[in-house]
Image (cartoon, rainbow, N blue to C red; front, side, top):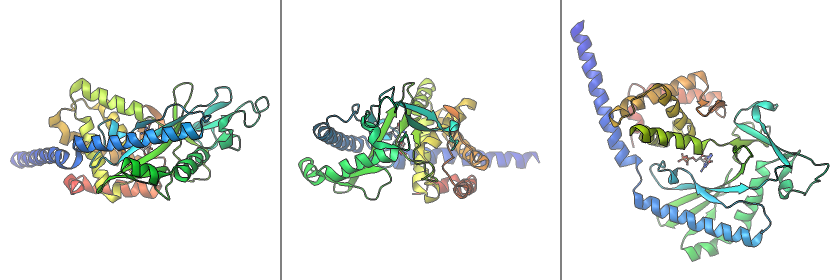
Length: 350
Ligand code: GDP
C-alpha cells in the first residue's frame, strides 16, 4: 500500500543518513593520519633513501641507475590508519638498442598488464655489453634476478646497525620477504616499512616494476608488471578537484575497510581506485553529501565485478585487475562483500 511504501522509503532514508554520518565520523577517527605522524614517517624515509644513495654511488659507481625516489600513498595523501609504508623506487637504465619490451598478451602466458623484456642484438653486442646482462635469464631480463642483486646489497652489505645508530633508528631487512623490505623503527612504537621497487621506464613511457606475478610463480618468473599507479592517482585527484568530490575520501574509507577485515586483505588500492574511476564514468554526483550512496555503490560494483571475475583497468581495459586472484579468493571476497551489503557498518567496526 501507499503508506507502507512511504514508511519503507523513510526507513531507507534514515539508514542512509546514519551511514552517511557514520562514514564521515569513521573517516575522521580511523582513516585519517595526523599530519605530524606523516611528516615524521616521511623524514625517516628520506634519511634511509639518502643512505642507500650514498652507499650505491660509493660501492657501485658504474651501476646504471637513475636517481632513486620515494613514492606511494604517503606522498599522495592516500595512506590510511598509520603512516607506516613507502616505496623506494629504483629506476634502472637500459640501453635502448639492447632491450625491447613485449606485451604480455603477445606471449604464451597471455597476460595483459605484464611484459617481457627481451635482450636484443646479442650477436653484435655479446653478453656483458650491458650491465644488466647479469640479470638475464633465458634471453630475458629477470625481475627476480634484479631483486636478488639489490637484496644482496641492501640486506647483505649495508651496515644497517651502524647507520641506524647514527640516525637513531633501528633498521633491519625483513626476512623472508618476497619484495625487498627494510623495517625502520623510528620511535619506540612506530615502524616504517620501506619497499625497494626496481623499475624500468620504457621508451614510450610505460612503467614496469619488479613486482612478481602472484600466481604460478615459475611460469611467470620473467614477467615485469606494468604500473598504472601514477596515472590512476592523478586522474582520481583531477576529478575530485574539478567538482570538489569525495572520491579520495571514499577510496580511503574502502582501503581502511579492507585493512580492518582479514577476509578483504586480498583487495588492493589499485583495484579500489579503478572501481571508483569506472563509477565516475557513469555517476556524476560525488559531493560530500553523496558519500554514503557512492560507498554503497562501490560495494555493489565490487560484488558485480567479483561475480564476473573481471575488473578492467580504467586506463587499459584489457588488463584484468583480478587476474592474480584464485577462483576461491574471488568467491570468498564476493561472499564477504555480498553479505555486507545489508549492513555495511559491520565492515567498519574497529
Ligand atoms: P597502499 O600501499 O595501499 O597505501 O597504496 P599505494 O597506492 O601506496 O600502493 C602501493 C603498492 O602499489 C605497493 O604494493 C607497490 O608495489 C604497488 N605499486 C605499483 N606501482 C607503483 C608505483 O608506481 N609506485 C608505488 N609507490 N607503488 C606502486
